[in-house]
Length: 125
Image (cartoon, rainbow, N blue to C red; front, side, top):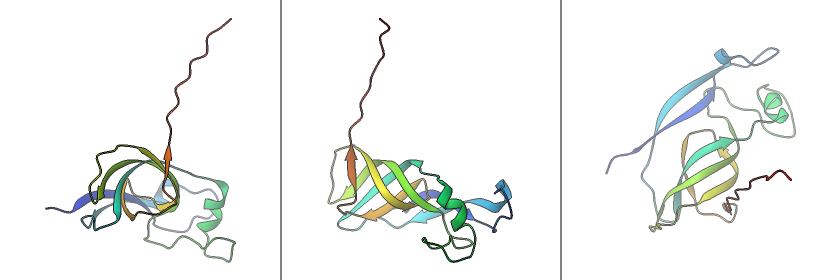
């Protein structure tokens, strides 16, 4: 079997002032095949909050700084793709902190939370 292709957003340089596109790079990477007790998740959304700006600096903070050339990480919402051992159940998962690739391979853990999709419509009265 072939490896799994993914993309990740990496910090290319430390911004001065407002971050700009040239502070980041989109890199293609290859993930190893799934091992026992691992799941494959396609990330749909990544949380971007004010704390991420502080992590772009190389200073002391309550969270460790992002490393140059390494993927950004943060809370994500992703779609379950596959697992080992196999599981045919598709689900949307909430992941507390995951590297910023569009596809991730990670160990099964209690921090994986299945989300329920709720659709609502507002009917005017």
